[in-house]
Length: 302
Ligand SMILES: [Zn+2]
Picture 1: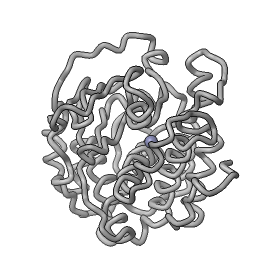
Picture 2: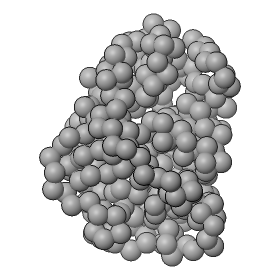
Picture 3: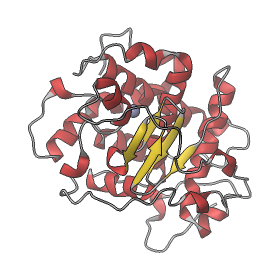
Picture 4: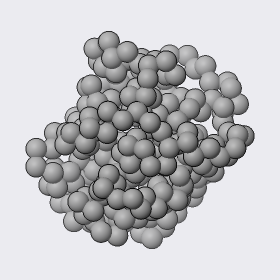
């Protein structure tokens, strides 16, 4: 199915399966989880920073010109996502595409990982309360291991990808979301807890290895998507893959450091360079095998 949105380049929109159902029960209430995880960016230690700074290692208001104070709008957006019943709804409400990504990614992990626990995405605007504490959209999409849910400000993500010079589009967004679900897999398998014992930063730190593995796991979903029964997403095209790789490049630490006007400082990397992120996304895609995503036992991180 070709979805045409006025003003949007069709090439940036993925193919969706005609008539496929969407499952909005995988959309949460936009936060409101128990308090007390103690989120404090810059003050709460590396664990919190690693969890929160899933795309960024710093406050991205630097990129966005400083005007980052948005009024809180708890739960903004989730009500419409809960009305997303089928792929056709994406034409009426473009945000329904996030339900399609979520359904497909989780359908994949349900078949791939024994004991996978289906979780929810929580769209929000401005700020959100999570089991990991209060967060704002400035941290980018993130996974909270305490409540095992994914949080994202959809409008902010769009803005962010474009600010970082990514071509964007559905496949780029789907990559970002698949990366967050990669963290969910890491949480379920215990890899996350293990990695977070090491709080160092830098190109070969445990934190970077954790992030690169999430990129690789995202790549395995891209590779296997066509085999997922009932996936609302059609086959990925070469353009889709290129858009995902381009997004991985755009969210590389070195690129973000450059964009924020500072020099490139590898010691401060928390997520990996553009090259590293592209490299591991491509390993995931080319092998289609999560077992090949062992970023912890290799010295060659790309
Ligand atoms: Zn991450």
